[in-house]
Length: 407
Image (cartoon, rainbow, N blue to C red; front, side):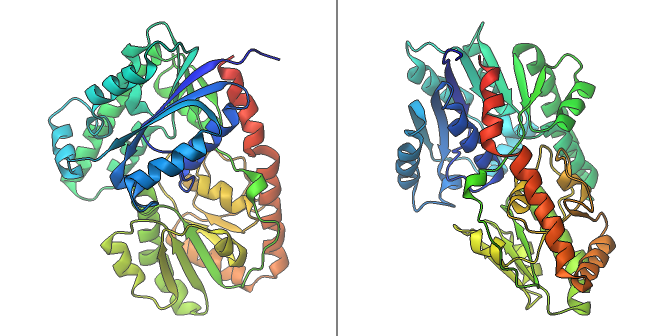
């Protein structure tokens, strides 16, 4: 058996509770990695983020310490109460060579706390869990430094710029994309291994930066927690995702403004459940126009919603990596209707594991057509999707591959 290594995992967010995409990925990777190596966790805990899930910052830290002590040899959770608003950070980033995400990170403070935590400890490898943490690289000379890319952030921002109708916002997004791409480029030489979520992301990184060394560690699902049976009500469409994340907010705005009005007109018996924290006032207003749309906000237990869902609808048209919400829906056997971007990096076949739609009219036609088909058609596709996830995307399989990176 290979010797256990000591790994310092540095995270700019708290990967607990495992309720969102990046949280789910990082929590499960830490959990699986701890079976093979000794993991020490250094984590920033932002009050404005964790109070979406906990009553207070203190409650978040207490619950997280209890959970991560099961898996981590050492850990320190750094509580942060941000005094600077997003708007001020945004303006500062415009006047800086740093991207917005790096500008929000207090590098000097983080380095000070990290130096205190490390002390005399020795680590075989350093895991940085996001691109913005590359500003810490100079703390680890001659170390095996691994960088996890939850997305290709520069491409995400370029896509967002292309979608902007406001000329000023378009220019700002292009500028931020340029800054992010500079950071990605400079990280290529300093980082030993770049972890990506899909082979497609690896290919795209190679096209952008030929010298980059990537390895694919896909997003996955803890299949042991997936319910065995479903009891679909035959009419409810479901979407789950934090609505303060631009790709999710864009998807729901598209669904409610372009798709649902036609669905509602042609078949008012269908209903739509939207689950996700922090919906904007614009999304609340759109949802409020329909009696058959329920905007639930954050929900702690989503299993009952998967159990009754007839379809999972995912019109995500932006974002990188692989979409954990897609993997989760497939793992639960819920028939999926998705935009091609939502399926990027996932080895699923349209018509076999899911149904594909690109335009608003595609979504309308497909949803109404599926409503007229035998339930057996949907059951078969849902079962195919579930089998795909259990065979290729279970975190117990993924953890074995991840552990080898640090050996």
